[in-house]
Image (cartoon, rainbow, N blue to C red):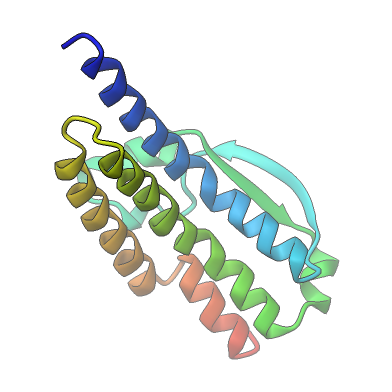
Length: 149
């Protein structure tokens, strides 16, 4: 019984850390691969709080997400496709990476992980859907980049 508690705590902590940090890291990795440079890194709340349900907006606006700031000159010279891919990488990784972590926990037999995997899948779908419909989300930025704006 005692060994189950640390496993569940580790599963939850890993998912939260993956969710908070993979977004900015994906922007950076994909952006660098496409020739986009970054001016600095940030740690702070989400830049898109309206994507979260009303009760969670304040929380997610104040949690320590890892972020990156693009270099202006680099973005001006990047192709529209490079910008769109870089913008899309962040939110896509926020859905995929933590879900893969929950899948790994389930495949490893962590107690409660099957139910948590279902939660993670629903959370991922909601993450993608809310960002897709947001005017300020990364997918919106990607669409604007492709339209040349």
